Image 1 (spheres, rainbow, N blue to C red):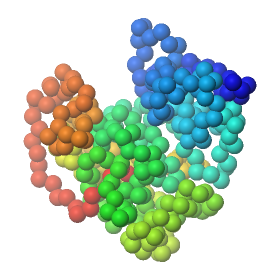
Image 2 (cartoon, one colour):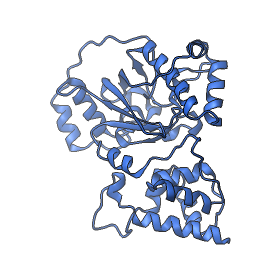
Image 3 (spheres, rainbow, N blue to C red):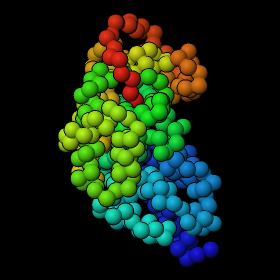
Image 4 (cartoon, rainbow, N blue to C red):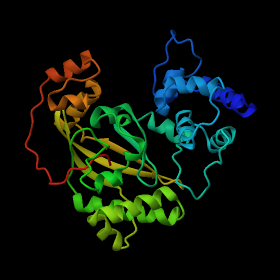
Length: 323
């Protein structure tokens, strides 16, 4: 057992103990014996197994990958200095300033945890999905079932070899296809100016240019811009189609993209969105006739019993997922 491995585990335990459950949107009750997050809660937030967290904390595993360290730093809401320290304890070089970061600063985490009535996700500068809340999972399906390398909105928007969308478990239709396509490509070009030597971004653009003609055409235009908004229809398997507004906010130099999906207030779609959140996360294997994997609450039943009248909606021809 190495000194660095022991220190990594001790630091991980200390930072887990100090993070209040409420800081990550979890309830805090008197029955909790853990001072901060439980191991299983940290594992879920970081997208790794509980056994892996145990081995790291006990110093029985001392060489976590950069991806795992980045995930732990996000889950623990570390600042840049502490994130870099965790990398060094793992024997890794911290991310350079010119690299795309998957790290979410603590202040942003606090803001995200206050957006409980919306479906929210955070994407890196290359449109790689790095965080989502429970509302996002309830509306679009749980992205954790998709391999990390496929959780990319640009790849969903410009499929290669007939790939299906991976960020949503059911159809999502954009009502502004051409505008959104152009915005995604111009946003990626803007990212190449900020992160000119980033391997992940360079590889993504190379793959999309070679594999998707539409992307190649838009990339050749040379436009620089940002993706800011969209209007979508989510074909939710439990409550039916929901029209939502998609707003994209960008955070500072890291170019994190905070995507927020909401429905217009006092509308049928707002009621459906609330029902989707209350019904839990549907099982995509059961199709559109499924039942939620989380038991329906009494509030769900009361809201459903108020009645939902469907109104005809004009759909566009393009199905995309995510932002």
